[in-house]
Image (cartoon, rainbow, N blue to C red; front, side, top):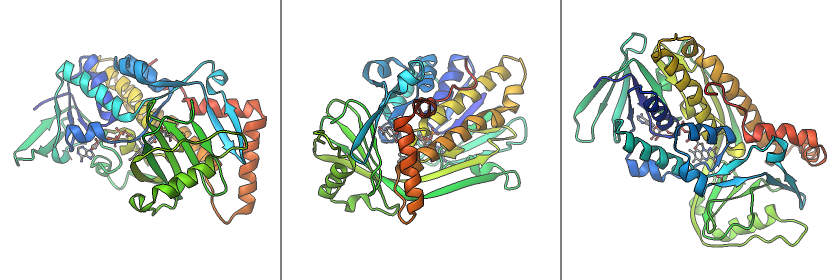
Length: 394
Ligand code: FAD
Ligand code: DHB
């Protein structure tokens, strides 16, 4: 097979890149190691930034999102029993965030690909990248039945997530990795109960962070800070509800409704960036290149912003107007990546409890008070929370 861009990975990054290239008349193939069902059912992020919604609109896949997504004007911040409304939309000239599950974004993009007929291979095993420094890189893979395939392309887009093969193809002498781990993780649950809140609640408590999100009129999504080695299956439902009541509790008559827990899992927290994002004909995007702790919900949104920059650069190349944007991809994308890294770390440090440092704990309360008491602090926070403008597409 010969194509223009070989895309590794059918997550949000790879599928959105494929869609935007397809709309621009640039051939591409997507190679995904898992089955379609696995990819469509993987439960992950929920919050889309304003610029992400704009990109999905540009890609023509915003129909379901506009009818089923829950548009938010802000969120509630809780600590010491007090609740403060942070009016993110009013503070940013009307930019609203949307709760719309990542797997729905993936399904919408897959449906669009079905319509366009652009090729996608599921269960592409042992994907390997070759000749990335030449002008005709190749990607090899194997079917589950053992037959071998070769794709020849002009470019390879490594959109294969944190555990993919693409990042490892950056030669050791050019690759630089930056990483921070956190002494906690998140236990996430899905419960069959109508959400006890209209909008998101982020809570700081001396026993740890808690959050109340939602998935539909009848499904709630909740998170608790737990030790990083916590085994989700071993956590009793009673303990989970008791911690949620305590950490989300207020001094007024707000009550948290309980329901059957239908899913629970623990997510590790990590900050990670690889530099550069490109080598020869290989370009990395999304989780293949960076990971943020989930507190500020930037992971999926950063994948989309990388693709905004990368798709624009491929368009410049194929429209014959030069390779300036491709050459600048790393530096352009990294500006926003590091700003989102900074905000993700800030919001994580603001809300989580780290035992044993009383001075830091007092400063944390002071930072929370700054948000409660100062409109300019809230405005600066809101600007980063709703999402910085994307570089790339206008
Ligand atoms: P992915 O979605 O990881 O897609 C990569 C794709 O590549 C996958 O389909 C994978 O199967 C495929 N692949 C991997 N290796 C290969 C290979 N060798 N060959 C071919 N294909 C391959 N973000 C938030 O903002 N909020 C959250 O609440 C949140 N929760 C999360 C919970 C979990 C458990 C995880 C893992 C992530 C979470 N994230 C969250 C992060 C967010 O989901 C990711 O940032 C987002 O999925 C990135 O999209 P991507 O397309 O770059 O990577
Ligand atoms: C969700 C996750 C987040 O990390 C966040 O900040 C907001 C919402 C969610 O899964 O709904």
